[in-house]
Image 1 (tube, helix red, strand yellow):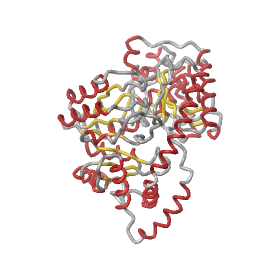
Image 2 (cartoon, rainbow, N blue to C red; image 1 turned 45 degrees about the horizontal axis):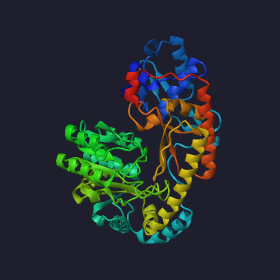
Image 3 (cartoon, one colour; image 1 turned 180 degrees about the horizontal axis):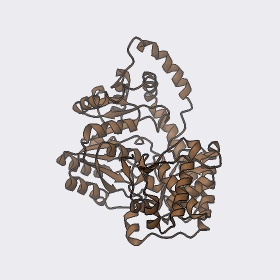
Image 4 (cartoon, one colour; image 1 turned 90 degrees about the horizontal axis):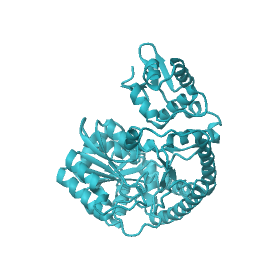
Length: 479
């Protein structure tokens, strides 16, 4: 039996305006499928009984039965007598309708292509491998050379760091999960931004945290200097959280950067309450034309830093790190050892070489991101002039206001056009941000052109079906 269960009312709220141009059972099945694929219905969650859902939605039970059957045929539901229907997540070919998976443009991942010279750097790293082959090869904290290289990079950025303050991880997501397990006990409060990086709040929830969301103003929207941090400071003081997960530079997904004065106010409030600030800096150095100097957040006060090469070098190189004081590094080692045996040595050797070339890497990425941003803004403005597209000054994404709560509907329509996008609610909790859509600015011109053209076709298809606004009370909680 599933550990989690959705009531009919909870599923109704997640479904939102699910009706499309097709039959009722197909539209309902498509909406539930998107919720499962996007992670808003977790795997192994038991869906409400057919009779209960039918009554809640004002449908015949036959319609709901047909929708559930359609989902079972796609491998997205598994029904057991006495246990109900449980969400499943099969491989991509089984859950993506025609066109074939290979014909899809996947615009849901915000990650640039690999460096042009990555293969050559990898060949050079192999030459360093024989010196390590006499060791067992299990590395829980990171090779001395890589930890020194990461520490040196922080020092260059204005934050003196020693190798003893570094733990190397299997990417930034792994780092966030380790910190969540080390810092959070079941029932502890933890602050997250809303919207935010989905895998961060998933890691905190898995550790047992009670999440306290604080809103993030999108990039390009002017706010008062103190208004910028009022919500997070108030949440720290009133909820007494053990941790706060923040993305201070080129926030994912809004693109906003926190000012230096705002960082100081947040860190001062956190220090006074004993709250550990986890600053995710995976995109911190990806500036396009951001004015001013922005050193690591820990320059402005006590903060634990998370970094990786996934957004600068390549997402396929699973190397990240944590910068923290030595007592926390020791706690992280104790938390880590039961779960994994360390970070691959060869990838560490590769990243050690590349970190010395980081200025060249960032120069290339800045030029690529500038071209990608300008191209995406131009195309969207021409094809969907009613959308509000902020002019981001760095990072890898933009957070578009669609002007109507139809993000999930648009994601479904886009799939019919051969395009995979991440709907706004993927970055919120309980169905929030239906008016928003995250789009990456880090893809090639050819991919960006094809993706936006498909998105425009999907947007036009929505205009053929009436869009029903949610009730005002629900809308206030969603946007």
